[in-house]
Length: 177
Image 1 (cartoon, one colour):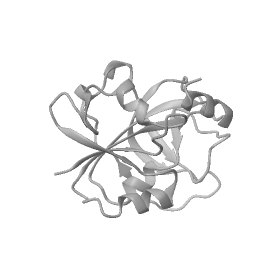
Image 2: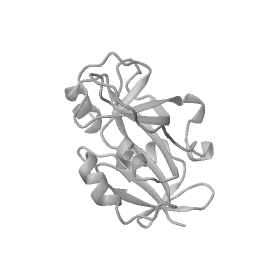
Image 3: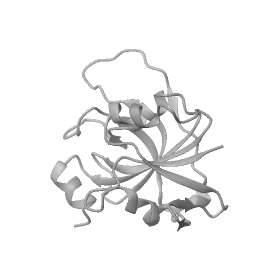
Image 4: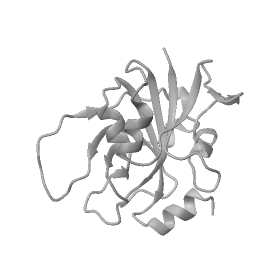
């Protein structure tokens, strides 16, 4: 069985690789992340958005263990909040149509540095940056629903709130300002 930590961007300026050491227990061993239980996880950069996710993950076995960690916006959660995602949906507020329910596996709490400070919530994936929404008590990203829709059964996610639906604030937080 293979284990993968999925991030959208790895760069030092704007990237999510830094979130691994900030929010997950463990350590870097060569180019892999070692969890407290000794499992080694490869870090895979998917790129931003649906097409990049599909291209990056098309050859990953569906029985692999995946952990998606990345930034997300929220209308009302505090910037810096850690959100453990339990369900993911597409964000299409102007129309409704039937979609499958995409539930995520619970993250192993021993993997998290501060599990008692995490919010459990839903994530809405969008094709573009969300700048306004009537949805509250949730986060918005651009990848997770597409990852889940590919059929991975062992998928967990933690999202770090980077902004309150502000592209400017996202860029500042992601850059470490």
